[in-house]
Amino acid sequence: MNSRHVAIVGAGVVGACTALMLQRYGHAVTIIDPNPPGEGASYGNAGCFNGSSIVPMAMPGIWKDVPRWLVDPMGPLSVRWSYLPKIAPWLVRFLQSGTPKKVAAQAAALRGLLEPTVELMTSLAKEAGADDLVRHEGHVYVYRSEEGFRKDQGGWALRQANGVKLQMLDQAALRDFDPALSPNFVRGVFIEENGHTTNPSKLVKRLVEQAVRNGGSFLQASATCIVLDGDNVRAVQTSSGEVAADCVVIAAGAHSKMLAEQMGDRVMLDTERGYHLMIRDPEVKPRVPTTEAEGKFVVNAMEEGLRFAGTVELGGLDLPPDWRRARMLLDQARLMLPGLSATYPEERLTQWMGFRPSLPDSLPVIGRSSRSPGVLYGFGHGHVGMTGAPMTAKLLASSISGENLAVDISAFSPQRFQTNRAAA
Ligand SMILES: Cc1cc2nc3c(=O)[nH]c(=O)nc-3n(C[C@H](O)[C@H](O)[C@H](O)COP(=O)(O)OP(=O)(O)OC[C@H]3O[C@@H](n4cnc5c(N)ncnc54)[C@H](O)[C@@H]3O)c2cc1C
Image: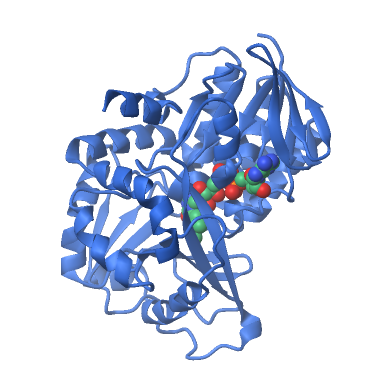
């Protein structure tokens, strides 16, 4: 196998895992990012490595919820009116993705990508001396109403059909499982296979530091274009000059679209903005990371406090954050964990907004570019980038090394939108 010099655009969780995986295969890496590692979407997420998170966002019947998204800015999913014209084609495609047949195929593809997450992430973290940041304790989903639980049956069936083992908890069993949770939750579903990190940003930083210790380099600069010589990669042009390379991985999260377009691929990448609110020195903590299934947010006890993270806002990359969406998580937090204080001084609270890189079919883009076989993509993981990063890294490293891939990646094809447009 030929050793390559691979330039990785983006030092989020995908870029960081890819760097270490490529080094395991004997390749040299340069990671390029205008910001320090782990400061994009990989900074403030909920930190879950949920191999079970294979249920696409657009499930059958989702179109019935659209009117609510448009009129309720504080709902779990909302659309900023001024962004509606821009995101309309993405939304149409999103709604079209929610047929039973497509959803079954999306879930199966995601399972192949996500199932090995805990094993792979643990191994990368060990290499980077970051195993203290990775836990394998499971994840519980909780419901306030039987109706909410019934509405999610399609998702639970999809998980089971793909080999996810569920442990159903009734109200009493849930109370025994975690007495810190409100007694008003009527149902729980525990999934043992899932893991989490207690500090996603620190984890990414440690992975990149390890890549540098292994002989790689990190360049704090913005990639502006990829320089080709015929079909072959020659360099990446950056805000700090050219980086010579014979292969490029584009892992710039929600900002990957422009570079992919330069490489001949019009991917339907947009962003599902998400928020977090953190409470420092909380009075109570959940036993394991817990999803409030109807409110669509997760609580995770992080190193720096209790993090409530989630919800979706379709508002693009440029509109300012609507901090009310982070604040509403505080009200929900108190309903979830009644042991929390009724008031907090501002210095104990922090809020954050991040850009999930999202395709309308809830699948990432993993594969080779149209213009050059030396330019590969690893972006668009939406809600599951922490979870999907290690396997994405393995697939990219195998691909660059000319090895057979561990799973079928045709569902993640960068060209899937172009093909369908032509066929339509
Ligand atoms: C509220 C919330 C909760 C979430 N919870 C979870 C969870 O529990 N589990 C899970 O699996 N996922 C979760 N996610 C999703 C997850 O955070 C993302 O999918 C993941 O972080 C994406 O990683 P990435 O490396 O692709 O992108 P990013 O982390 O955004 O990294 C991309 C990097 O590319 C850089 N970049 C951009 N443009 C350029 C350029 N031109 N040149 C060089 N570099 C560039 C950026 O500076 C950035 O550092 C959550 C997301 C949110 C918002």
